[in-house]
Length: 93
Image (cartoon, rainbow, N blue to C red; front, side, top):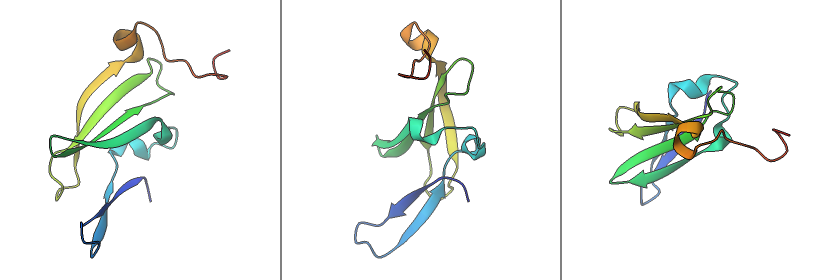
């Protein structure tokens, strides 16, 4: 089983899980470098793959809750976005 988002109705009577984007099935993908949030009525997932040479930041959106399909909306490198590669304290020195 891969990474999932738990969905619970407001009364707490039913629940289900939604699988995370397929790229997260890669065992080298570091999921704790991401977050899930709600914007404009849609669920978004943003993550950084620390093993990617360009340290890409990816934005995924769950367009339709019933389909469980995430759509990749944007990918940008930290270098392009911030003018430098991502640094982790204690990992790059």
